[in-house]
Length: 76
Image (cartoon, rainbow, N blue to C red):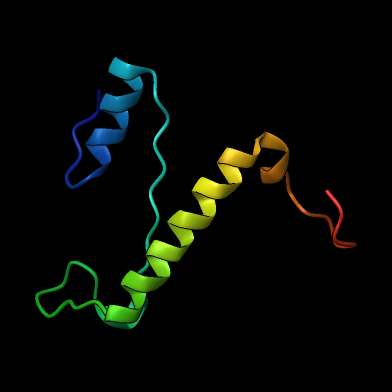
């Protein structure tokens, strides 16, 4: 297993030990200086993140057909 810093080692551990795939969402923007000494995160990003997770869970609950890519004409 490769040694890397931050959250990413957990993904390899989850897959190797549990056989579980891991998904990360990032809600910061470039001007928020992620991991810099003066990093910050807007409160609105937290709300957007919670809505995105809710949407993902609803799509997963509806079944794999709901996660299929949408074509240019709006059909799956």
